[in-house]
Length: 245
Image (cartoon, rainbow, N blue to C red):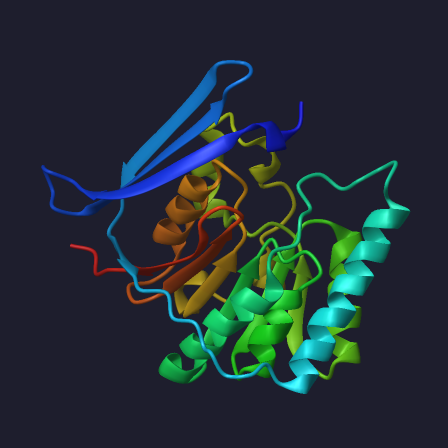
């Protein structure tokens, strides 16, 4: 059964008991009558998502076009043996958000969780971030390194899991979605980044995966860190980790 048969909804409400924002997720398969519900109070605030309206620079347009062509070719060559859960996001739209964030944050440490071809990490590097990407599929890591190198971007890529060992229990506690199984070594070690030093994380969650991504982010990153996610339905979502009591 394809995950595309599911639809998801997400809402952000204030908890009556704690006053903190609470993420509520519902994943539904109408045909099978299946429903998954997730919720959890997060010590995070959800921010307005900025988007630069400035023209896209020529070198960035060339990067996005080249990346799209490489991805199309990769998918075509793997038509009979596709990689699980590999779907690219809307790179131009994400770049516009990153561009605004780069202006306000003045750079910082950026890590793409589940980097795929590493397009977003490469875009972040071009915007002045100290960028890295973690991907568990070796073929995609090689493709990401080639793309960044060919476009003159300095990005550290690692083949491994973006789920640190001290957050493994967050994966163990859920049976779904299965593609978030950690496996492999901690990719942060290979790119020599302590998750507590990350300023901005980017991830492209599948339906029903956002709650796990947010839980990992809350567990391993430091107050003030930001999480930018892209959803096929909702577009960009930006959250910032607050100060723990």
